[in-house]
Image (cartoon, rainbow, N blue to C red; front, top):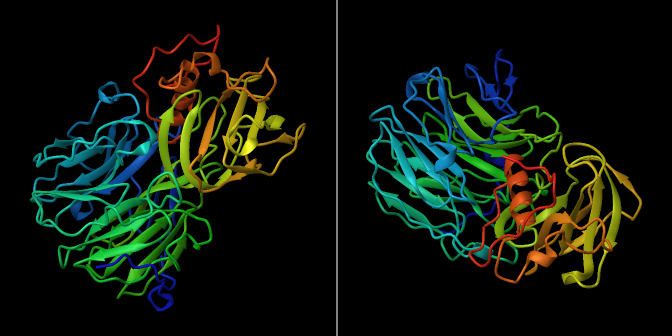
Length: 449
């Protein structure tokens, strides 16, 4: 069945929250469901949430692999030290047969905690995103297995019925990326829905009830879709967007509800409570030394290699880490000639210079003072994508701090350091390269993680 890109106005309306007001605290927002706690916003970014059957609470997964249980029994989690460089936890699913759960990491590893291991896709690591990451996990209703979704639309079935995927048909890659972000299984048919970053919904052996997307190439008002979750009664699905909007599509009265977000926060995941049909929204509002995620509004973000800085593909606005002054905008030596450099005015890296280079349309000028809400420029779809990292503040302002360490095949110490900072802020880290040994950082350089 094709990927469906047509928004259904008839399928979406306003869903009543009744007398239950949204409850928001730290990294979890509860709507029409019981709030029981949440991880601190000062910890590892929250990437996934899953409700326990029978309304017995929920589990929250952080990027470092740690699972936190609220009102539900805890069975363990991955330790942060178990994850290789460039790998993060990405998915969490509850096994209705055992009450346990599975944890998924971006390299395709699946770990069961009181839930049976059924297999995993074994994704190689490499630069330029040529090995699409595992991004989500969905269990079958009978508890016999699960589906693993990859960013390019590929779906692997383990202990579950193999069904069609969209691998090779999404415009995933270094140009015009559209990525698969979430998968949900229909409890009635056993089929599934897959949501893409630009709001498309692909229905396989499950009814299509609508989506936010009007065309296949991102005319969707610029707000990324991040999660899809089935309604408990099998009457459709909820879709969450990064700005806190949750829309319900299906046979029941549908809704458009808004989750209030703290400054710099984005929605990362969604789970429906099967006893109330209310839902939980997971929020990534991680901060590091006073900085916020500068890529929080970029849609279809695809991590690429770590070299002088960190490379990403995607499209959307770019922000500073925090208060800063712009010291450079252009340098003809970079692809497209753009090299936006800004000197931080606060935080642990105060005085250091950060750059955003390559396929960007600048919206700032040299000497301009900016804040974490200032749009520096717009990232566009192109083969060169984006490189961001630490700039050399002593040389002319068009150079990376790691330029003398880079031989064309290696990750520099400055690139690895900046990737660690972005990871602390909730951004998927870049992909380390095998060639060469990173040179040293300057003395007293701030470290992260």
